Amino acid sequence: MTIRTKPLPRRVPVNLFGMPFGLAGLGEVWTTLARYGSAPALVGEALLLLSAAVWLVLVLGYLRHLLARPRTVGADLRDPVAAPFASLVVITPMVLAGQGLYPHAALAGQVVTDTFLTLTVLLGGWFTGQWIYRPLDIDRFHPGYFLPTVAGGLIAAAAAGAVGQPRLAEVLFGLGGLCWILLGSVILGRLLLGPVLPPPLQPTLAIEVAPPAVASLAWFALRGDRIDVVAAVLAGYGLLMVLAQMRLLPVYLRLPFMPSTWSFTFSWAAVVTVALIWLQDGQPAGYRAWQFLLAAAISLLVAGIALRTAVALVRRQLLPPPPSSNAPAGQAAVLSGAGAPES
Image (tube, rainbow, N blue to C red; front, side, top):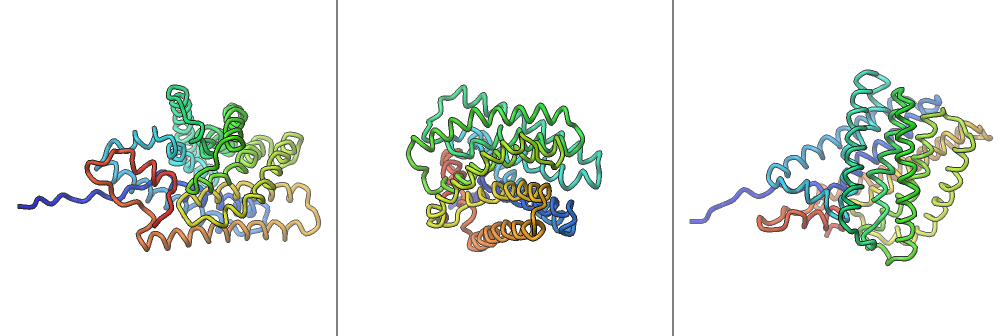
């Protein structure tokens, strides 16, 4: 007699949480335009709602697989390639609460922001301890390692500032900024002196433009949307990283679509948001047209990646196949969590 076992549900690789993260970044672009009276508020709010819906679907999908394989979460958090992307599970709701919920329900927005802010700091501390405790292969370092503490700290600072907690925002700005200095030197040294990143991880090179942009947004949340010496210093390094990306265009154009392609979305959305603020402060000739062109460009980029994601989902290429019952718990995390190309 043949015993039929129920097939395991397909797992949700943690780097897929870059999808709601990127949509939240695009939503922030349009809410910034709305704040300046250059776009209807509904556009940004709709994008933030879409981001929240995608985040919720991914969380439910991840939990569904977790019920069948409880060790998945431990394997994901210890995986040397995929683990940093897990922080997006708690970072994304901070953006959504600060930008989308707080303006309509201040108390609820502050509670949600503080809840996920706490989780972000705790998870960043756990990752830091994990990296200290277990020796890391420098060749496995990639710009995604910015996410737990650098992006987490700076986005938490911006979120705390947005919900009216300036002292907490200053503390978190210090957390994220100092981690950027420390981790940034290690990651850039690995990129300069180590072997070339494998193709599934090459889209994460776009994350190099994110730290100065996110630091700028955190600074603006603390000091208001005006350009001062700190904003100018951050912009100087950000300009260097943006120009460096131009040299990487031939590399990016050769890459097939893969889940890690979402690395481009939030990183460049943050750059565009900072550019909108600079244009609004300086108000050069035609600045409103430039603001709209930048918003349209990042919207087309995110829409194109989203469309390609939908195609992969329909073709059942987006999620990795269920592992066999005797496969190691972390095996799929190494392959799919890093954003391996679909076949």
